[in-house]
Amino acid sequence: LVSHGILTAAEETDCVACGYHGCRRKSKATPKSLKCNKKDCGKSQSLVGHTLFANSKMPLHQILYIAVFFLFQSPAATVVSQLHCSSRTVNDFYQLFRKMIRAVLEADGAFKAEDQAGVAAATSDPDAEKKKVDE
Image: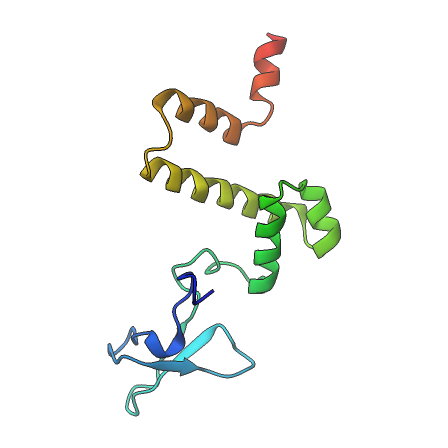
C-alpha cells in the first residue's frame, strides 16, 4: 500500500503534534498507530487517518478483499458468505468505492453531463430504471 501511495511509510510521516519528520509503529498490537520519534514528544497518531480505512474497525486486509470482490463485480451476498461480515458493511464499502471511482472520473472529465445524470440515478436507486418502465 505504501508503494502505491495509499498509505505513507511510518518513517516518512510528520508528527501532527510537533511537526517532527519521522515516526515509528507504536507496537505490533496496534499496527495502525504511529508514535513520534522525537524524545520530548512521543505523541501517537493514526497511520490510516484521512484514508478510506480511517473510520473502519475492520482489518485492512479484509477491506482490500472487499475491494477485490467489488472490482470483479461480485454480488454482496458472495462477499458476505466468503468474508463472514454483514451485508450492511459490504454495501457501505461498495457504495464508497462507487463514489471514489465517480469522483476520479469526474475529475478527469470522463463523464459528460448526460452520463452524470444516468450514473447518479443508477447509484442512488438500483430499481430506478425498473420503476420508469413500470410507469
